Image (cartoon, rainbow, N blue to C red; front, side, top):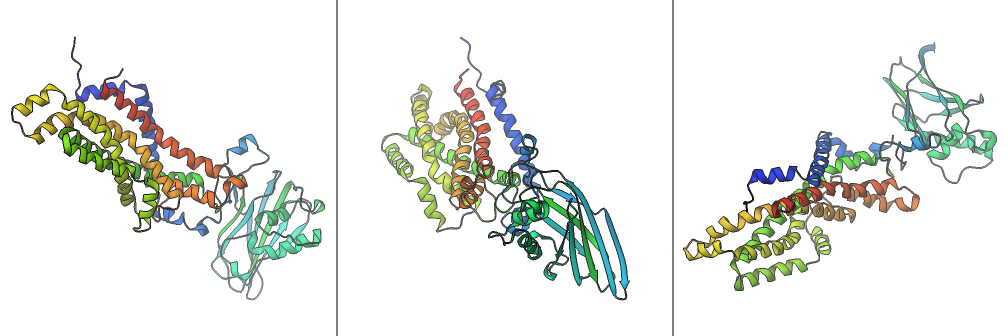
Length: 450
């Protein structure tokens, strides 16, 4: 009977011949590519994630843009318009006027989610007026408050004249005033009390008056859509696909670090315990069971109130509670190795115990250590995201659990914002798949299973 080659090259060859191992490796490479993309994103983006004001030009809690493929009339994306004409003139001494004209055709069955006006100049205007002309020929005049000159503003900043227009048609002021209500007044027909959309050509003119010569440095009209990106947005308008991407490096880092520490400590302690045997083994096993009996989640929650966590501390705390699982497995393997005749022969020859352990035990524990190190990554990620969901996470980092925590806080499931829950939750599962597949493949190879 031929002897099986158990060298490192044989392990690699057997692993590469495993279909599940290759699938896991391909998925892991894809995740690492996205991790590299996430790490290339400027640090200010990470910081701005927790600043709601940074996302005020994004539509709030809207579904993914790909829904427009299935429901083209119901969902649409944001449109950014440039002026079709811009004129500057001076009708009198020390009076300078700029007129910026936009034009667009609206064919959707719903109004824009919100409208943003972005206009800036080299001087501070003394007056700014918006003329919003509808397809039916009616023109609504809106005076812009002085407080928003030269800064981007939306419909809520100019709601006064729009609300007056609504009340003149309906005879009452809306109980709830938000961008959706204000946008309906601009896009819907007054003949239907602003319930039916007016499709056709819209013309928007912005008249800016100044006492000094003007130069318009920037001018854009943004019609916010009711869908955005691959995964939609949350309550603050933050793109969830960006949040998922920003959270990927943190998830992998804490998962790998947790598994690395927990498995190395557990395998070493379990191997020593099984090798020593007798009373020493009993003491080590008693300590292991004490750690194993600690309730992991309550313990971590309690510790987080004592020390402010960072990624390293959080990973070490999770590893502190995880190593007993691997110690028990390593001990059982060490007991099996200990019963071999070559171990007894080395003892009879007077070879020191530490040499026996590192010569016969650790080399045989290393392959299974690698397998469980890979299999332990998903557990570390899951526990870290669970803590983040409970509001316990390092400051100024983006986590999928934190996104789910925000979804729970703003009742995403009650309001039907399913994308806010589905995608972060799915990523916790997806990121675990390659490690499970690779871990199982390594375990098969190291145990000699075909």
